[in-house]
Amino acid sequence: MSAARIQARGLTRDFGGGAGVYGIDLEVAPGEIHALVGLNGAGKTTLMRLLLGMLRPDAGTVLLNGRPPDPAVWSRVGHLVETPFAYGELDGRTNLTLAARLHGVAAPEAARMVHSVLTELNLNRYATVRARRLSLGNRQRLGLAAALQHDPEIIVLDEPTNALDPAGVILLREALVRRAAAGAGVLVSSHHLDEVARVAHRITVINGGRVIGALDPHGIDIERSFFALVHADDERAARGPTDEPRRVA
Image 1 (cartoon, rainbow, N blue to C red):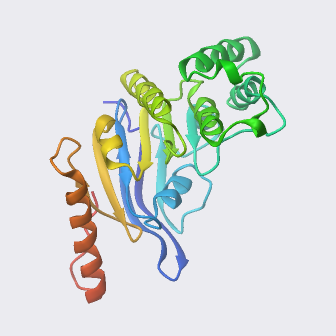
Image 2 (cartoon, one colour):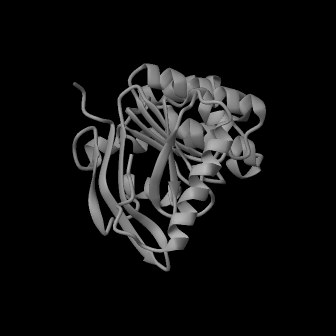
């Protein structure tokens, strides 16, 4: 059996004042699209930064493709967390070429990848446009292209549909489904429950820095189920600590 693409055990980072993530267990299997959902401040971005090594945990472990993160593993990761990768003074093609080279792709192969992803995400018309002149949506699309072009085995995307128009959302959805079908493990956070339900195999709900449950991507009235989970967890938190441990999916 293949190792999980992403595996976190007991992952904790406490910023004080109730901010952070606490004791999170999470797995993303090869071929799986796993969605994280939660309200603003729930801990989704912090969790993703911990998984990618952008933050050091206070406790817990992270394995990528069955091993601790290192440069060899990093070359097989594609990510977009908070800010798209793009140098404002460079055009789209140059930005993508740099991103490919940073992932260890040789120059001839990088050129092929860049050409392919420009077509896949409908960015050809912006290939020679400086990134600072792009709209927010097209800059986001450029950042997604940089994350996906080298066919990574591990994909981590934080709110990837931000600023995308409906056509961009569809292109991203199709790109993620293709990569998962090829064996990539995809972790994506979103506020758009209806959108992630279209592609996710699993949906994990985070609240207050903890995993509080899961949603059925094929369930009826998924938004009602989400808010019911969050409301019940907020009520438990308001009652104060108990002897019953928080359940972690």
